[in-house]
Length: 208
Image (cartoon, rainbow, N blue to C red):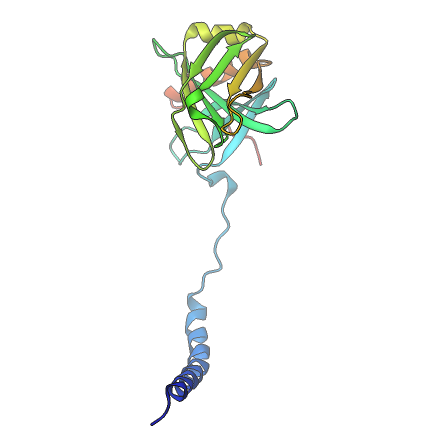
């Protein structure tokens, strides 16, 4: 009776022989069905962000929407610490409701102490704390609603200050400067874009 080892060797040999015969046949059958792909038009990349324009230290960023829809746009600024490290981001867009003039989203690192909340000041005054809404692999997010009075403070201000607390250093909060240079012009632009979107008019993306 053949041993288990011999059976295994015999089976392996049979498989190799079968594959040696079958592979060329499979290659011949598959070749006509293989696709070389087709190029993607950059302008059709749904979800692709692009910078519409820059106002001072603020970017007007839009996202490519599906055909027939308006590209949503918002203000954007990258926040760095005193050593120049990129730490957080803020985006802001016009809402224009009776109670909320604008909405701001702050994105902070995953290593943020959520219970400490996010602190925000304008020129060292008018401080407010905002709770974190959720976290993803990208970071942790604060969604803040701002009144018309708060937007006016930002327009008249020189510098904002964002305070976050690291999990590993709860006694050493990180203070990030938010430049307000170009804020008024940027907010005016996103407001115009928001109003135009309601009339079915979208921004013109810059040429590639």
